Image 1: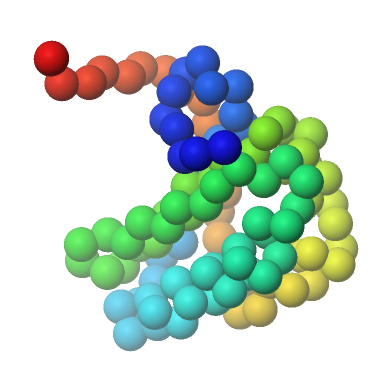
Image 2: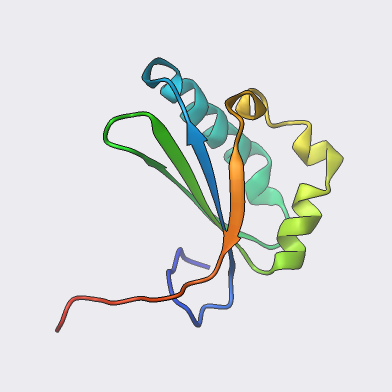
Length: 108
């Protein structure tokens, strides 16, 4: 399944926010990439993960999609998977599930 921002896609979206010192940003981004590639992408129901970095380098957001809320919760409750996060918890992630409230596209 491709990354799609569509209110009718039926995916469960989670955005995880981090505030970082610019000098540590690459450590976090690398840790997220390793965790996603080695662990998360192999979990049942995982759809996608897209990491965004603010232009000032002080914030990182991981925009993740899951096939369902249940699939995401099963991942969160998987101690083996969670034990492989590396340094990510040091960055005090703050994550919340989201639904699309409004969407607009450029006029054709």
